[in-house]
Amino acid sequence: IMVDKIGFAGRFSPEKNAHVLIEALRALGPDAKALLVGWGPLRYQLMELCNELIPGRFAFATSREFLGDYYQIMNALCMPSAEEGFGLVAAEAMLHGVPVVSTPVGVAHDLFNHRVNGLLATQGEFAANLGLLQQNPEWARGLGKEGRRTALKHCLASTMAVKYEELLESLVDGCHTEQR
Image (cartoon, rainbow, N blue to C red; front, side):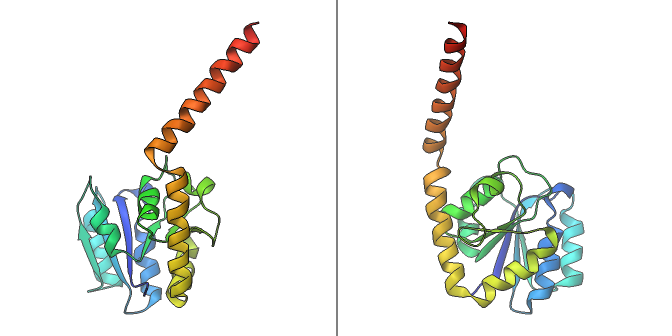
């Protein structure tokens, strides 16, 4: 695979840092393109930044529900958030076999084994990490496959429901033990 279509999915708001993808793409060369899927107050500001830094190399789409078709287009997903609850888009992209570059927030901190099933980066390291994916397409494919294996093991709703049930049972059992 050629890593040339790099995506962002989420709210266009300050804490999501979508501008990090745009700035990183400028450093990747003329073949790299951005697909920004989302909505929010910074949409037009991000469009202006794209026109300034990567003219003709970007597309915006709006979707709040099914993102599967967009993940199929992406060769990599960037999640440069300053803060994140779970980071559902990372899990969804992983399920589609898309390599993910993320700040170590939300699910990424616990789910990713750096350079094995995803890439963890500071905001200043996104261009270098995306460059690694570009320069090593077979490794990028393997990273995506390993990410998918990890997501299938840990991120399916049925798996998470069982884990939550086990956690609740252990907490309830712990309370019953203490009361004796």
